[in-house]
Amino acid sequence: MAAELAVYESLKEAGIPHYTGADSFVRNGAFATCGVNYTDLGAKTADLAYRAITEGMEGMDDYYLMDGGIITVNTETAEALGLDYSVYSDMGELVEVITTEE
Image 1 (cartoon, one colour):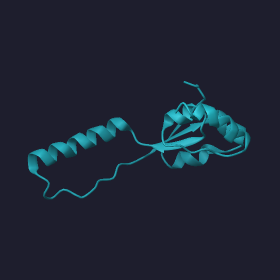
Image 2 (tube, one colour; image 1 turned 120 degrees about the horizontal axis):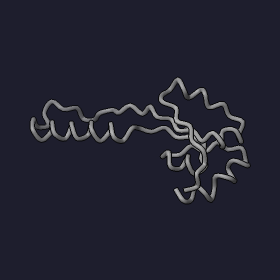
Image 3 (cartoon, rainbow, N blue to C red; image 1 turned 135 degrees about the vertical axis):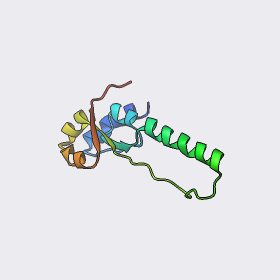
């Protein structure tokens, strides 16, 4: 995340939209990311673990999917790149942030 502060200006100046793996990078200047609500993910994981412990693994799926649904966009970076990020609003919850350099 700290490295993002070292590269985001160069990428922005070069006109490159930088997509990352976490919203903290977006808060440090990257363009956008898509993620999950970790509270919901933790609750679902705990429920599955409880089922596995109390009922056994038989009848459980090999894997489970979690909705992503949270798209975080740095509005300052979007403006500098001339990008209309409103296209993401139909894909999930759109969270707008600015560069906080934390």
